[in-house]
Amino acid sequence: MRFIDTHLHLYDEAFDSDRDEAIMRMRRAGVEKCILPAIDRSSFERQSSLAEAHKGFMWQAIGLHPTSVNENWKAELQFVKDELDRHRADYVAIGEIGLDGYWSKDFMEEQKRVFREQLLLAKEHSLPVIIHLREATEELFEVLDSPGVAPFRGVFHAFSGSAESYRRLKKYGDIKFGIGGVVTYKNAGVAVSLKSMQLEDLLLETDAPWLTPVPFRGKRNESAYLVNIAQKIAELKDTDAGRVAQVTSENAEKLFGI
Image 1 (cartoon, rainbow, N blue to C red):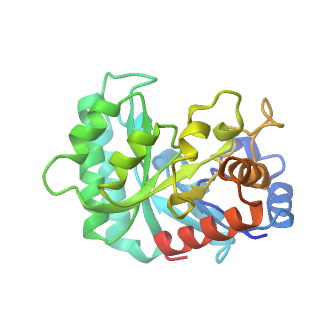
Image 2: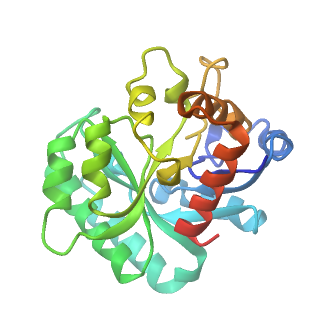
């Protein structure tokens, strides 16, 4: 089986002690490609250096994460725009972008503006988006329904919504849904939703070092555990992990052009 991890923060400090070993483990597990989503300028050098060192295996996205939207948001957003103007060919997506009301809603209006601007930026550069959403559903649809945004291409990272939300979001364009370790958790809502979702709409992801799947929950996540996520999806979809791996990999290659 071959896998593509479409959301992996391998440049995070959590991997500083054994990054090379983690890469070896993911390759042994069948992970042939992966995408490194951006957060903000503070982690940009680590991200880009890692992607540069592993061309043909790692691809990178550029964007401003919603939890990094603060008093400095204009400078951060300008950095994203400047990077795209200078090095558009280096990026396969704009992300991780979106809205997050879990940690704080102090900058929610700024988050909405930054999110919308990056959605439009993606259309301008013919790139898909990687969308983060946490406790800001009403605000999300406010942005998506604003003039000029739809249709767009992209993935809803760490999707945890209902089957109804899945059907509603699909109407905004060529939309995929990233499924990660949460699907393996007891009473996970997305496990119920998956039964109504088409395999052709799914991407595999880990979000490592976070959202570790069962049976490794409580430990640092890593890309090698993508196998466990695929096996759980196969169980829920009454198919085999090989088909999950094949279809989701083809979905990722088409969406991101990798």
